[in-house]
Image (tube, rainbow over all chains, first blue to last red; front, side, top):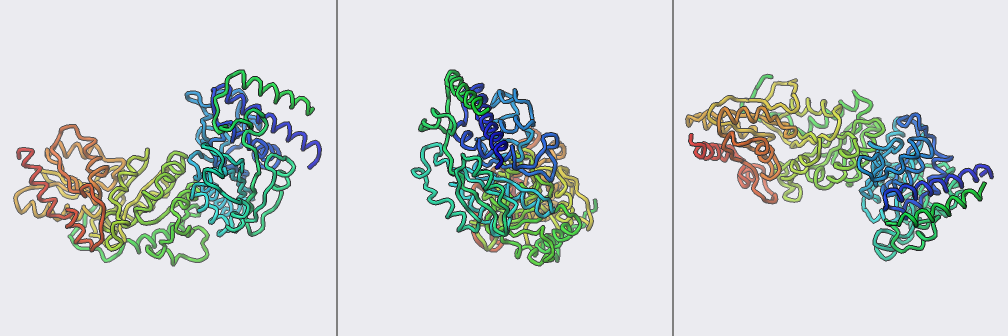
Length: 277
Length: 318
């Protein structure tokens, strides 16, 4: 990755984290931990990899994103606003009455949201269908599926994984956000997923693990072209990544921070962003 | 629309008509995609031309199948999915509800072997509650198929209709009611027989029973209208109310639990215009057996309709 590109993506990742924090500050609560953990992969996707145009959100040949862990909507909304799909100010309407930015992603409300998600597991099959449909139509595009490590407790995710590999849906990229936590605690304590890379390999994927908060590693992984086997990338991430206090909060799936907490976090993020320049 | 009902069973089986029609739709419309959950062999679609990549066997994974179908809808396809009724309703209900209806995707779901038509697969495969589930899905369309002309016509309509469409249909033969090539207007019931004393509102396999019942009642001097209300949702409210006012005695007949199905739907729209009775499955699970045994066992016969009409008339003071 060129140094200029890397700097641009680092800045974008900071801006996404700032956007997430502003959304949650405005509403007073929200799914902050799992939003922050995917800020880096979203920065690489929307800042570099995905071919999509805010002026043509319905273009059939666009690359598509399905954030199956739909509660990370605040992260996707920040990325979409920064990309120009809608006004940045709209981020402050998160979960307000009549908003276009509900807690969980909704393709009927939010420009740029490619699929409605939120009932965990369901986005996996939807993403398979979108990618398979594009493949049958001969469209040269990819679908990126972000799925949570807690989410894959759902059996539907494994039905979808089996189908992806068996039917060679290799224009679909699985991105597993392995942030090690779910609502009630650590995944290893709730329902241990064991080695995710092994699991996806056993299902017939070309599977590998990277530091999911490292922009360069994400970029390299996403530039990999799939052969017959579809690609599954296990993103080794930190829930709450980028805001120390959130990272260190045990129950950080959904938080109710005070405005002064958010202000402190925003000040720090802005400071670090400025230092990059 | 011409009624050709003569009480005889059609020589064609629904399952063969399903296979043939799906095959034709795949050939005629490049946006049609057909997905099945390892039951292609049950409706004759396993013999589809090998060259099509739009007939997809998803394996025994109905929730995944529905999700994939909804994803394909989002990128421009018109998906038709098939499995047995319980798996087309209970097993994948959340996926049809959210990935389909809520997410704004369009999907046609065919649930074969509704109610007692599941016969020798028994209680595990016998949905008496599928209509109740789909009725609770906002905006869904529910059709209980009466005969072959209706199946062919509605399959052709359904692929192009927006939203969730649920088709419940057996795999065996039915009595033919409508002329070949008939066109059916969704949400509009068909009056198959006029009558001033009572109206039997039926759907699916119970239309045939209702016609038999009306003949028996006529011999007893009771003239019962028979309405085929094949679209359970949206219900033809105007027709139901009109016959309630006209006869003062409404009896519904359905191959479904009395809770949440046609009887519930009809009761929902009436406001004291008529006394009502029902021929439906009491709040029971299914069981194994031949269809005639099961229809008797669960009270889904012409004789039960006759008795219910007479009892309802008595309550109506007629």
